[in-house]
Image 1 (cartoon, rainbow, N blue to C red):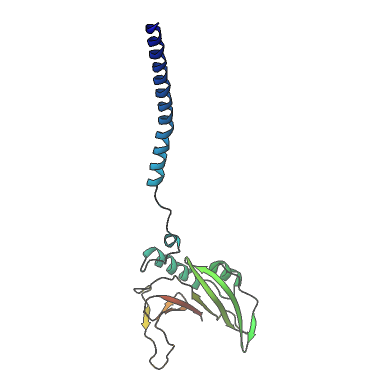
Image 2 (cartoon, one colour; image 1 turned 30 degrees about the horizontal axis):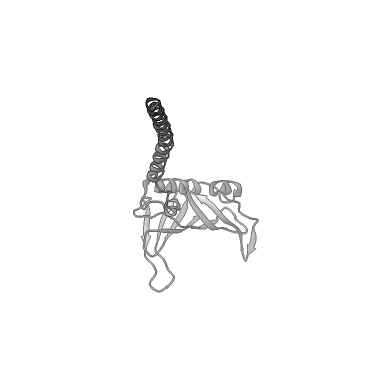
Length: 199
């Protein structure tokens, strides 16, 4: 009788051990992947900072930016300024209908693009009786480019006029048949406006 009781007790202890072992293995099978996932997610790189997504200015003296701008200015000087459709295409804008300002006509547009730069406050002025002799003026919106060197051979830099408080330095050059003026900020580098006159 005692032997049978001992055998039953031994059998029930073995079954209990086996059930405990199976339960422990199941818990480990769930716990290990969870630990791995937690470790991986904590090691993931942080989301990009907002300041990295902000628009960066064109690098100062960037050859690519400078060349593109220079080439587009040269193309623009070859366009007849009385051909408004061609101007609109070059400037990626739409110049409005002419309005009479004294003895000249004036067309304007708010925004456009030239040489990869955003431009604004675009104005085309011409004598009312001769639209071919026109002047195109526009501002360059920031970020701009820095003009650290001569772009065209026949160009000269002019400092601010000492008697004019609002005067700014500028480059002046003859490009094809047009006079090109590149206005600078007070740092003598950053491009702020462009004026192109056809005579």
